[in-house]
Image (cartoon, rainbow, N blue to C red; front, side, top):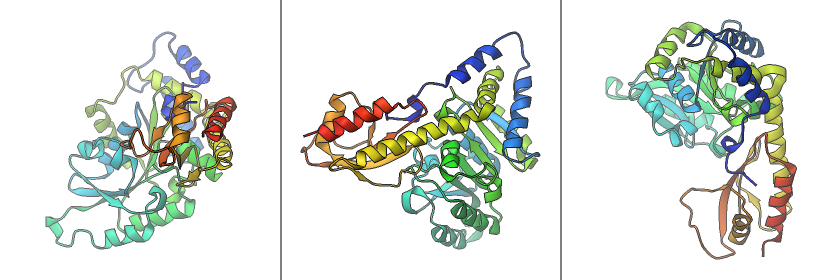
Length: 352
């Protein structure tokens, strides 16, 4: 019953087989391998973006931080949701890689930026000119840190507002596939057609061993990104092992199949728990995460049975009255089984 994180799940068998196949013989280094040529072509086709520049890096943090550093100067600010991943879980990597750019936090329900709140922040930015931090970029994250998914209309409204102020738009797509499956749209509709200029296209949370793509839909800043990736220590010499993972991920729509499994597991889990006394959703479970509250007695029973998930927030008290409500985050993955869901639900329902 491992619901702590989709990062805890193993890599998909197809991905491991692809890495073994890529291990045969010699291959050009630093992204010059033939597999990477195919990966770039495949991503351009999937996103209907023939001119896009495509790069691979090993982590989501490097994808986000290097992409943002490329589009935002150090004297500017990046507008993002109050509970954005780049604000809460990347140890100031965006600030570090940009050389000091600020993050301006914008409120909104379920960790989605409110359009009117963003408009106010942009309107009153830099009132004293050179004395103030300047407008730099806008960053969205889907799936959000609270498990919600931006609608296409919401994304376009934010992007239109950003572009009115000549600001580039970044999308943190660590769970891009999960959001795409949830919305039932095309990759193009959820990226450049919605106004996204640069995308962090995740795979590690969805069955890869460790690789993310950075996609610039306008390649004018591609060379700068290449330099920043090298200078930042994220250009792999044995790049073929990144390329092989991504090629397997995209082959036969594996990335969508894995995300669909994870999302479906969340829906089964949420449905089962909703029938249990004391269970209450805190945020909409729109992809593969559940944020909920329930009595501590259920938490204690689940912990005793070996279930793994996070109390939320992380600094929550370890003990307390049996009827005290605790909050928790559950994350499903492509590897989550019906048996895990059934046992978790059964232990929860039986807690007394």
